[in-house]
Image 1 (tube, helix red, strand yellow):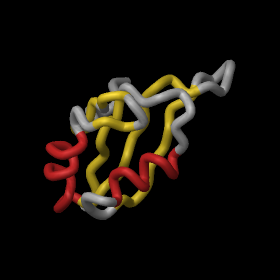
Image 2 (cartoon, helix red, strand yellow; image 1 turned 180 degrees about the horizontal axis):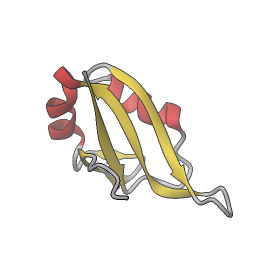
Image 3 (cartoon, rainbow, N blue to C red; image 1 turned 60 degrees about the vertical axis):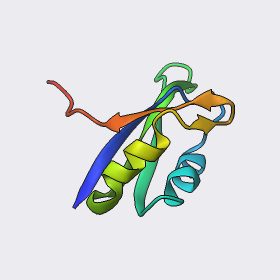
Image 4 (cartoon, rainbow, N blue to C red; image 1 turned 45 degrees about the horizontal axis):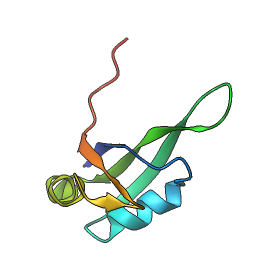
Amino acid sequence: MVRTLYVGNLPWGTKPEDLTEAFAAHGEVVSSRIITDKETGRSRGFGFVEVSDADADRMIEVMNGADFNGRPLTVNEAKPREA
């Protein structure tokens, strides 16, 4: 099983590989993505990390509030998109 984590308060220059590297230290990362503005292509300051279900709770606990390139991350389980 895979769970998706929301990761907020990211520095503008963050790349998906940076998220993968940060979270992989605490468990299995399946994928990561940064959400960008459709018009400018610039980061919107948040992203999502898909992780192993077995590691998700530990990752939320460890990474929420953790310093990431000088900024405290906001990490929680992603909510499903509303139609």
